[in-house]
View 1: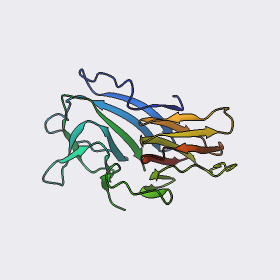
View 2: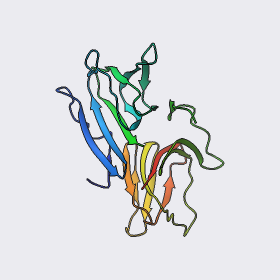
View 3: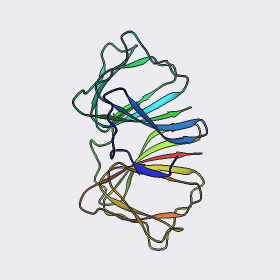
View 4: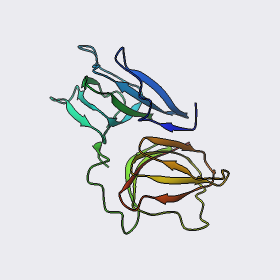
Length: 108
Length: 108
């Protein structure tokens, strides 16, 4: 794991599946870059995570759905959401025409 | 503190001084957005922080100097650096012509 880099350069082709890079691992906290290209969570699937996740969209476009909300939230660059631990959520959509780059900070 | 927002919208005018917004406070970790407009650390000043800081440039341009490196590192959008606790550093320069938006994750 390096101590520096650029999250928007050398964005991998995620056409065959989301690409996750570990950026930082610290006690009880980790940072990842996730690149999507048209992926969505499988039908009926909900993330149900033991840790909270602070997520920031760096590029692209997505729709994030919470089970306890009637409609998905559209996300564009700069948008962030703090997802509480165990709050069930799913990715409804990511833009198929360009990479969507997420920054995810998992934390207590 | 809200549970969502956009870091690139409603960027405040930092002409009179850097503007810091707390985004998230968690156990032993916090996330801030810092907006600069031409500011630099005072001559001879070095940050010497008890926590590590993972910093990501979201917009603008800056130069970050470490005391143990001969030259400042130029930073553009997408660049990140993990600054170890107690590693002395300073901001040599931020673009005076447009806002520089930093995301700072302080962590153990």
